[in-house]
Length: 333
Image 1 (cartoon, rainbow, N blue to C red):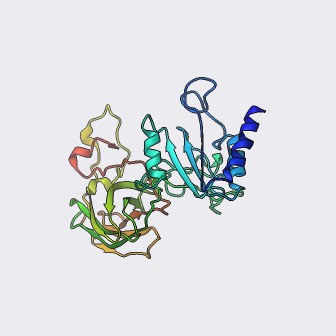
Image 2: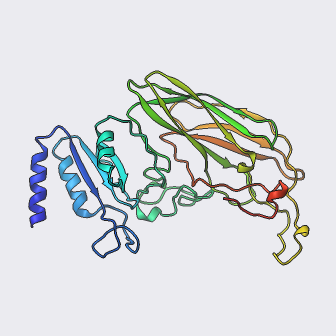
Image 3: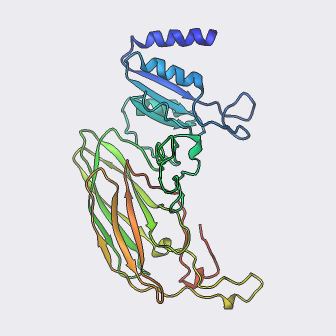
């Protein structure tokens, strides 16, 4: 009853404010009183019902609501987003977290954080994650679930800024399969205040002969720009990061002579074609074509991540075994 009385007093006071900041989340630790942490697993990823009720009642007062989620769990926030004018995920901010949050919430610094995980709409979407393989992360054939979209609520790498940004003048440059690939793009601050953007580059192999993630993070760069200022960014990617372990015959056991292992065939040079898409849509930077002797042509694609991108992956990759040093390894992290 005391908690209910305090909540009623808080909600009644909200009408006198210009904006309401609602702090919710879990209590991290190892004891039974804690809701997040080691040994504190949960069957439901939503916030506590009392917290959802508080957000709903505050939002009903007609005052702009900013919801700040503090905790170590990747909550399902589909019940919160319709009620909040802004949503901030603060994780476990530490001793200086209060100062950092105040700077961001008051606009003294730009909100430039990007999600290191995928936030789901519901706990039943646990198969939807940043490293899902081609064809995964969705309900088969019809794509969406019966009761919710198959797409995540917020994908890996998602994040907003206090200003607006555009990408333009895409260019992908490489000569042979052994050369470094240069991906360049111009980033422009089109808003009316200075800000910080995080530009991300993702990769997908469209016709791999083995199961691979649908999208993999190749790199990212953080850039600060004043209003109206443009910056040219270049990402340099080793060709080996676009490959994977492959053998035309099963590899022998470790007890057999390693010399009997079949080498990965040499790869021929590939031409590059690039094109762009309208602003606000995830850009497909280009298609890298290459031929493998005796095999069908392969097609690689590189994607430029943006705020509305639904791609993403953990920052790790597979390596092609065409180089002698890699022939004895199936995967390098």
